[in-house]
Image 1: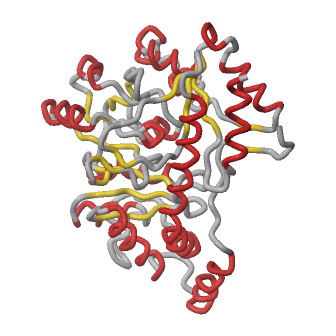
Image 2: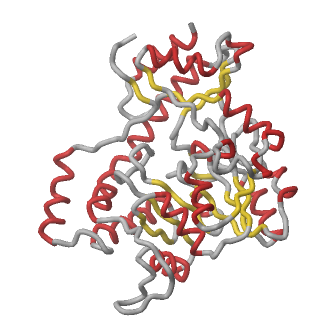
Image 3: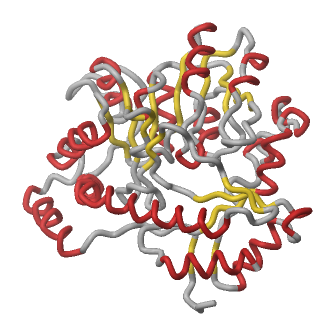
Length: 369
């Protein structure tokens, strides 16, 4: 193997010379934040690109999650998945909401709709599913449950930029959807995030909340927070948008090479393709089953690391296993058998636009040996 270090993901950086004119204009305008011209341009550009009605930019995805829950005044209990990044559940905690963990589907790793209804109580106000690895949840079934019980539906779509079902943005589902534009994501603004909403009134409330609750120069209508995206982030986002299709295509080529080279390997399980879905190839997860493969997931993880390949046990441990949440009744392992098993077997392999196909072949050769 090459001595070059390969990480699970790396940010895509457009040519530096193309970013400099944006910076020069920001310096000339001396408008660094607070809804500047690049901020406004990026919101419109993202609406056009994603096929959505309204978007509100944030300084990061976690603040967007926290604010989405504030926007719709969610309280009580919210049913969510333990198989996600901790920010999903942390956003509930920061709003004083009790998370209720629901098990996941074995073939998608997303929240299992068939197990949601049994967790609904009089205190339940919403469902917060996660499109894990950018793969869509069963949005039709989850919507049916939410409508039947009068629950709000907030989607964590932080992995799902540009993902579509039957030609429609995944972000058009639910009452609100939250995106992350962190440097490790398919599309990034260094740090950053956004809330997708469906009407002007809701967008206005989101924009008030992310700016301390100000509704004018001297009027504050809610205890908001400072979560605004600055002009440098927005400018970088505009530049990134020019290259995102090219970046996704490169990710697709890498994913296809993994599939071609790893298919049929005993004990190494690949996720099935999702029908009628336009993917963004944000991650490439595999499951390692020791009895068939011959090594455990952790042994494979260490073996790759010795060869300068940094994969990721993503998501391990489960959120429900962290001390801050493991005392919850819904966090019990017996309530989450599928999620527990997947967390012990999952390994995300390197995938990013500048990863060479020859390196992918080397990784596959090592795994097949």
